[in-house]
Amino acid sequence: MKDPARAFLRHTLATIAYRAAKVERFAPAGFGNFQLGKAARTPVEIVAHMADLFDWALTMAKGNAKWVQSKPKSWRAETARFHASLLEFDRYLASDAPLGASAEELFQGPISDALTHIGQIAILRRQDDSPVRSEVYARADIEPGRVGAEQKKNPYEFDSPPASETAEAPATRHSPAS
Image (cartoon, rainbow, N blue to C red; front, top):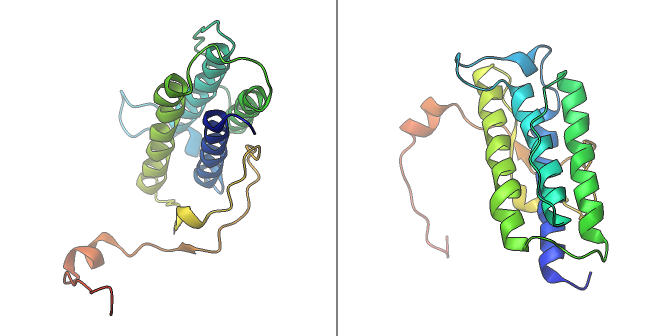
């Protein structure tokens, strides 16, 4: 790809797809409607919002920014719609069509907002007693253009120790030589 900013945005979308698929995968039945508090969004509302974000990003990229808030459907329908909206936006970024918004605007608006929401879903999974396994995300197999729900499994997954173990563990520092 000739434009490094667009290439970076595409890599970011693939990263979002990877991280979103991880928090979506193996979500227990009924998780989409898990309610942490009466004013908090449910997971399905968050995923629907993320799909709306990338529909908006596409309109921004095309130079005609328009926000449309959808009414959430089922968990499965919204996760499919989210990945479809990522795919449409990714295809536009992969094309030679001009950008109607700067890469910086696209990143600081819809893209960074989606990263926040993926973290929210991960927290809701933990609160719903269905935590997502930790991993070394820097080693994940991220490939621009791979924005669907099907993602390669990272061999660097691990189970996080319970908070009580990490809180009681003595702090140790190791020198680079150790």
